[in-house]
Amino acid sequence: MTDVATWGQLLRLVTHDLRNPLAVIISNLGYLGNVLSGASTDVGETITDTLASSDDLKHIIENLDLVAQTLAGALVQHPRMISLSALAHDLVNRSQQFAASHGVVLEDEPATEYSAQLRIESTPELVERVVSNLIRNAIAHSAERAKVLVQVAGDAGECTVLVSDSGSPFDAQHPERMFDARGQLTAKSEISGRYSRGVGLLAAKLAADACGARLLARPAEAPFKNTFELKFRRA
Image 1 (tube, rainbow, N blue to C red):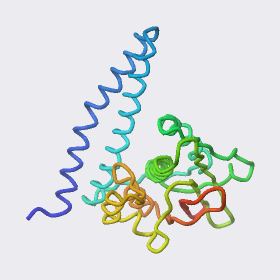
Image 2 (image 1 turned 120 degrees about the vertical axis):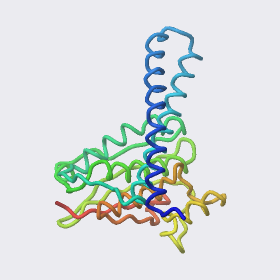
Image 3 (image 1 turned 180 degrees about the vertical axis):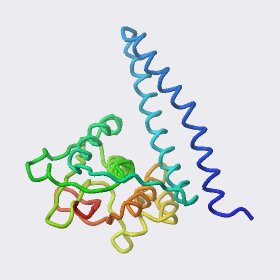
Image 4 (image 1 turned 45 degrees about the vertical axis):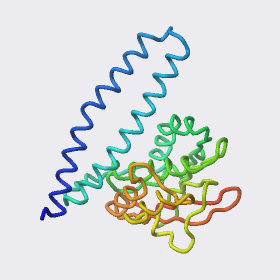
């Protein structure tokens, strides 16, 4: 019987094979967008929608690769100092197209002198994987024209990223189930489940654990209903 680590290595091969043709598709779409910049509105919208779908697929592939690395025991870390406020702001900007495709307003709070000083020592790619998945889940479960807010806070010992939305509520009885493997299956089969494409919340939890961070789901203060809370030890 094939062991789990070998399955992880095989899944990594598959994600590697998927990246190459997807990169060509994205590159060619970008080229067509430039060449056909004066074409009809329908053509422009088709290219934009296809690029958005390609970006969504890229996100799913990266999640699968993270799961594969975890199964294979091959998760490599390269920690360095990170400005949490700058990282969160960058991810909000990069997620605007996804938010627009859902008709959701995605915002972050302006950096303050204090929040700009909040730093952690971690692997940037893993931190990005957590936060981007939390943002996408909040967007996907928000109603049209609803607001998703990303905040960065901290104290002397910890730094926190908060992602709040007004979407379907978390399971108050078993919030930890949102992040485990069985919880992904349950969420997909239930109307009220907080399913996240590409096993997003499982990938978020795996990345958070690898960074030594704590990932929680809890009720939020009005006007929001839910908040993802990601806590790091402050550097």
